[in-house]
Image (cartoon, rainbow, N blue to C red; front, side, top):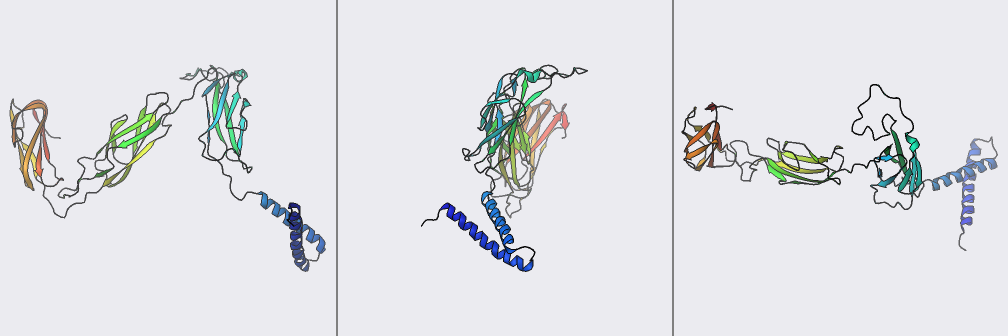
Length: 388
C-alpha cells in the first residue's frame, strides 16, 4: 500500500523516538537523576524540532538581482506626482518575487509591490520657511527652484527591497527627488560609444649604432578617435587618461605621444563630461610597445651638420656636411622656414634667401639601417645664428 504523507510523519516520530530512547539509556547509565521516560520525551522533542528547522532554512544564499532606482524628475513641483522605477535589472526571474517600497515622505498612490511606483506630493511640504539668513546667500544657478527663496530644501527618498520567492530579503536601493516650486527634468548622461587607435602595436627605435631587420615605427604617435552620444545634445568635453605617454590635442580626435616610453602595454581611457562630470560609460583601449630586436652587426652612424654663414646676407649658401658612418647613395632634401630656396635642391649645397628669424634644415637619405639621426638644422634670430 502506498505510504501517505501522515504515515510518513508518524514513521518519522517513531524513528526519532527510538533514537532518543537509545540516547536516554546511555545518559541514564551516566546520570540517574531523571527517569528514562522523561529523558526520552525531551530528547524526542529536541530532535524533531532540529529536523523541522533544518528543512525550512534555505541551504543556499538568496539569488538577489542587482538594480538601481531612477526617477522621471530631478525636482518635482509640490502637489504633483513623481515616478520611481527599477532599472538595470539583471536577467533573472523576477516574477517569483516583488519589490517592497518605503518613502521618507509622500504617498504611494500606485505600484506597491511592483518595479514602478507613483508618489503624490503636497503643497504642505513647502510651508516651513527657514529664518531669513544674514547676510543673504548667493542663490546660485538653482537657488530659487528648491522650495522657493529661504524655504527649507525638501526631499523624497524612495527605497526598495527585492523580495524573493524563498522569503529572502535582499539589499535595498534608493533614490532621492527634491520637491520645489517647479519641476525639473533629470540630466540624461552622455556615454562614450567608441574608441579607435590607428595602431595596436608600436616598435620602439633601436639604440644608436644598432639596426633591425624588422620594421620600426617612424614615430611614436598614435591617432586616437573617440565617439560619444548625449541624448540632450549637450556640449561634450572629452577627458583622456593614459598609463604612459601624453595626449596631444583636445576633442574627439587627438594624438597619443608615446615617445621615450619603455616597452610594455599601456591603456587609454576616454570619458565625456556634459556638465555633470564623467557620469556615463567610458571606453578603454590598449597598445603594446615592442622592443627593437637589433641585428648582430654593429653599424656606425655618420655625423650630419650644416656649414654656412653665421650672419645672414641677402643670399646665403649652405652645405650639408656628412662624415663617417655607413653611407650608400646619399640624397639631400632641404627645407626652410621664413625663407625661400633659390637653387640647389637635391644637392649637397643650396642658395637661400632667409628672413632675420628663420631656419634651414637638411634630411639625408641613403643611410644604412633605420636608427641613425638623419637630419640637421641651423636656426637664426635677428639675422644671427641661434643655438637651441
